[in-house]
Length: 119
Image 1: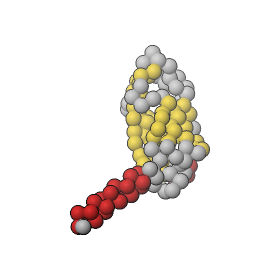
Image 2: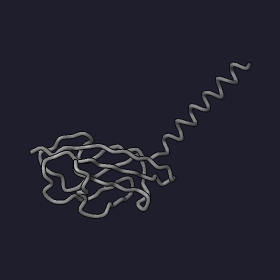
Image 3: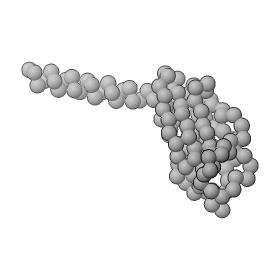
Image 4: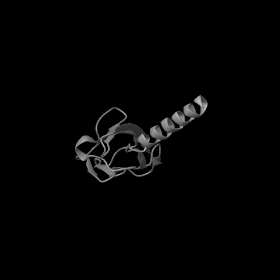
């Protein structure tokens, strides 16, 4: 009886933790792709998340290897997507995208990745 009760509690705990993990806005796709090398400088960075994000509490920063911002405007967020325009004519190099997202149910996630421009 004790073993069965323990098994049920463990199963319930695992299912509850799996359910709460679904409630976070996780990065699904990025353009440019995470870790990609592209021949032409992009005009924007676009991020898609697993659920809607709160525009006022979410953001994206794009910086060059020396830490300078290469964003050309404000971050725009709508639904489950965020994007930011980049300065024209980015030189060859590695760029870091750092993001944070607050989902519509108030959970915060964050991350970063790089992409490289190599003509």
